[in-house]
Length: 378
Image (cartoon, rainbow, N blue to C red; front, side, top):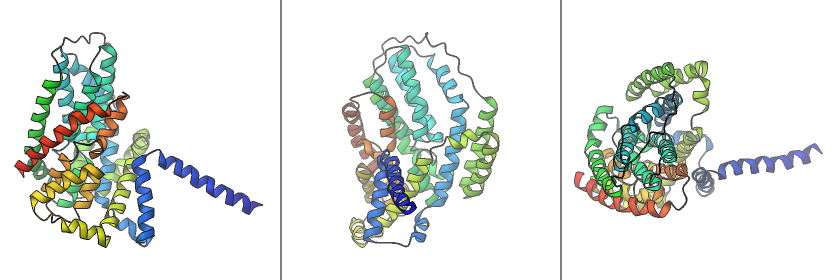
């Protein structure tokens, strides 16, 4: 009888796991892909962790903890609400939100910037009627454009920075021309999309408190962590930060996006396993991405099909020109929504129906123009 109960409980347990996984499409796809790859071209299970770039994952984990701490301190929302009260029309508000989203994305990653700015836009929309769909679209484009600048801006930059071996400053200097050009393009798009209609936000009298101690400690720890990650000491730095917050403010650690870390680990395993398959390896090798332009084009186009983070991981197996790859996958974040997970997050956060058509009416033309700009700069 006990054996029968055990056999019945096992499928139930597996069913619960699958239901949890299936709620996240990206995770579900990666799990299925891993199972298929192991069936077609099995690897020893003990060898799979060796496919993961742990330096990148550890750096991402540390940044998630520190950005969550800054978010929970309330500083971002306080600063944002202080800023917007100097605005008098929709166009200026849109430009400010675009600039703020881009600036935050350079240090807090594009996803975290969205979690700060999109809710702010929605709260402002409740105070005064705003073209919220257009606002969310330009904010999504903005975090992808602004995050290009630094290794901290997005996961693909973080990965390419860690694998390139260049300094933090050298990476920023290399990416500056593309970031500046795309932000200028976005500023023009924003001016065209929004009118200088009067705006009244005088009804926003809500008080936004800031946990100053948490904010200051997190900001200082952030600077130290980046310096240590730059010196390839992300592991020890993460251990100190994680233990410190667990002892002091454990909710900071418990509330980070662990799913993102799991997805990133699985991306390394699945994509590097796939790239090692003789047929796929030969197909990508035949593309001849040894030159900067071809590596750039491959990144910009492949991102449209599999998103820019997986594209960076796959193409890094075939090209060591990190700058060309970074340019390509950065541009690949525009266009079709799947080009960047930030696009999907922005649309989901907006809660607005019928977003996909207007989103692509802006993002696809932007991708085309951005592709030519990147090609010219390469």
